[in-house]
Length: 252
Ligand code: 13P
Image (cartoon, rainbow, N blue to C red; front, top):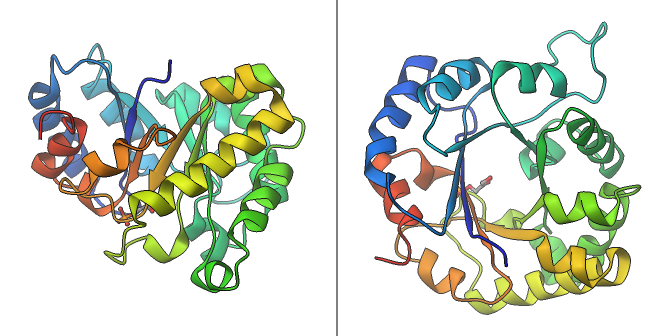
């Protein structure tokens, strides 16, 4: 029922030229791969060129953030409608780097997510606990709060179409991946809450990605977990060969 999604979050890496070169090389390598959705999230500046380079490929393009207003006096911000107009169909909201480095809260995540839906962008909503929170036994409580507040006002139909990315903060960029058991535990908890709050049909359709040091050699064991529906990949998505191997996780 849930097609796996492999999403590359390029963060603040790659110029426009480098972004286009990457997708131009990636496209033929994964042409013909079936049963998996693929997405790349370049910087805002590279969205139009990457979207043009990927036209007709079936590879999706996301922005990494958006503002919640359609337009206005918000220096340095980009609206969801502008992202849609630039050629992306998706947007990442609430990444932990935005929460910890740029002051995002569950409330701003909720506003952005609603703006994305209004602009017909598919949101990828990031949640996840810090190391302190995990060691304090608060993982499930943190996830509950982030889901409850972040997804406030979202309908079951909207939930079914969006994507949640579980990214334990302690696993991001650290080389320290959650074990498949830790990932499955968190994903099953998330699915349970979604079932409780949005209904079993919506919860069964909503894809929950794992993120945090996903690499070609650990993706298959993570994907073998029943509630892991794909991955949000940082570092390993920046290289054509490693991202290709992740997309082809069934073959590897
Ligand atoms: P890494 O894969 O580099 O750990 O990054 C994960 C991430 O933050 C994806 O959004």
